[in-house]
Each structure stands twice: as structure tokens, then as C-alpha cells.
Length: 235
Image 1 (cartoon, rainbow, N blue to C red):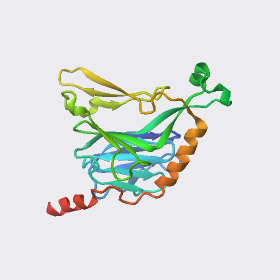
Image 2: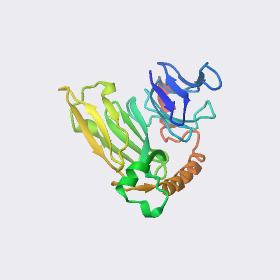
Image 3: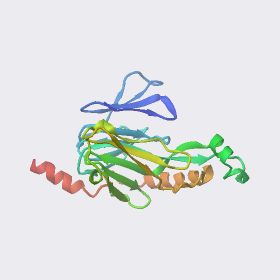
Image 4: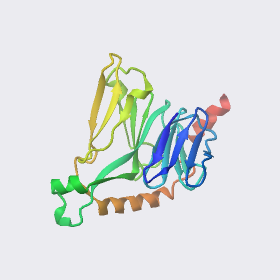
């Protein structure tokens, strides 16, 4: 079972079972609403943004994006991964909320005023083979912009719950961890923004462009749709 709260309203949360995905808004009703997952496997990973968009990874390797206002996915990337998805996460950035541009770069103010928000064009997924898929919709809409094969760098324990992506630090660094066969943990430090301090205005401008981009996503974004249906027909 996966559980994910809306970071802007804790009365709204999403949860999955072995067969379905649900949304519950306690302000409206205590009864959860079932979301549409036809043609997909079991929901295996969830990540909710602060802009009403939910990412759901499935055991069939597909990824679906939902909006808070609809039961059906906004778009689906069929068989985005070769193996079941075990973790999915929106890119979370730390931005400078200083009131004056003169205050940008001041370490004390940056730590005091900085906040976190979702970067709507970018998200990450990890599948059971421990491939780390980096999606950037401003670069590619139908497939990952880059894939890191972490499974080739260590001997995994094979336990799904030992692969995690951490929160973002103030310099935009985050950590990805994997449990190993010898019961140790490999931790990889990652920083795609190279430690840059991002202003609230810059991130808001980028997210505005991303919102426009998300509105143009096709119902099925992945090129694997035909291959997926062909495989289902053969079965």
C-alpha cells in the first residue's frame, strides 16, 4: 500500500491497494474516490506535487499523471520502464524567498527564507532493476531525458523498500540510496542544478511554462503504446 498527501492540503490524500488507486478529500466526503487505472498494473509508487498533479508508477512499468480535478489520467507513459516501478518522485527545488534581490546569495537569509516547491517539468523514477530515470518534459515528452543504471554499480539486496530518494538540500543536492546484499547501504549524492540558488520569481516563471506544457500532453505520451497493446493481444 502506498500513501501520499497533498503538500498544500493535508485533508487530501491518495492511497493504493494491490488492485486500485484512490483519492480521499476529507473536506468533501470520508468516502474515497476510485481513480481510473484501466490497462495498467497495480499502483506501486506515488508522488504528489504542490500544483495538483499526481504521479503514479505501476507494476507494469507504466507511469500515469493525474490532476486533482479528474479521475482519469491526464497522460500515460505505457511501459516507461522495463520492470515494475518501485519509487517515483517529483523534482523538488529549494528556492530563495528573499524580498530584495540584494539579499540573494546571503547565506543566513537564504537558509532562513528558503522554501521548497515542485519543478513541474521534471521527475524521477526507479524501477526494480534499479535504473534511475530522469524525466524532463521540456527536453523530451515521450521518454526519459537520461537513465542511470545504478544496478550495474552494486549488488542489490533485492528488497523494494530499500531504494529511496531523499528530500532536497538547500544547495539542490539530494541523495538516492540502495540496500545491498551485505546489508550495507550505498548512498549516491546527486545535484543536477550544480548548487545554484534559485529565486522564487525564476522558478515561478519556469513552472508557468511547464503548466502550459502539461496542458498539451497527449492522453498517451509514451511511444510504447503500440508495443504494449501488441503484447497484451499476444497474451
